Amino acid sequence: VGHVHLQVGEIEPADRFYAGLLGFDVMIRYPGATFLGAGGYHHQLATNVWQSRGARERPAAMAGLAEVVLLADAPTLAAVRDRCRDAGLTPDAADGALVLQDPWGTRFRLVPQAGVFRDSQPTRIPAS
Figure 1 (cartoon, one colour):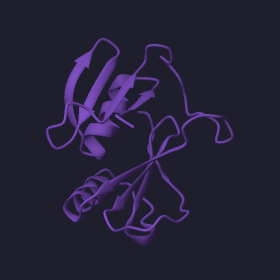
Figure 2 (figure 1 turned 180 degrees about the vertical axis):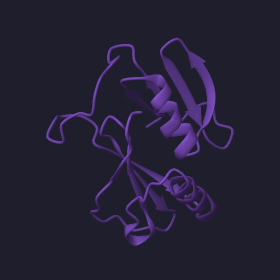
Figure 3 (figure 1 turned 90 degrees about the vertical axis):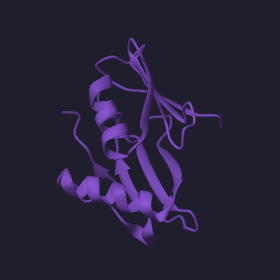
Figure 4 (figure 1 turned 135 degrees about the vertical axis):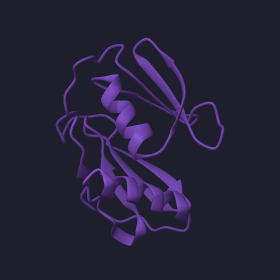
């Protein structure tokens, strides 16, 4: 997979989640879209409202992408955990992984590079 491109309901809350909380760098913005990267790469993640403006959280049983798993080193995990704490959030932290859910229902599991995958409940992050 070259990158993950997500339909979101609004760009500003998406930027707060993906850049502000997860720590991705905003690489470029277009009308209705943000491209985010890490480590200097042009983008591993993109969000847009081109066909989803105003969308709300998707039902859990709805078909589509439910979870994205990202490998993260210890300093990155600690930084995300700190930003969550500062925002008043407590992400699930099973087996050293952090599990968060964006405002549209997509879970993000940040796994230590030597991590193990297990079921866990996401922390919900409101859209506003």
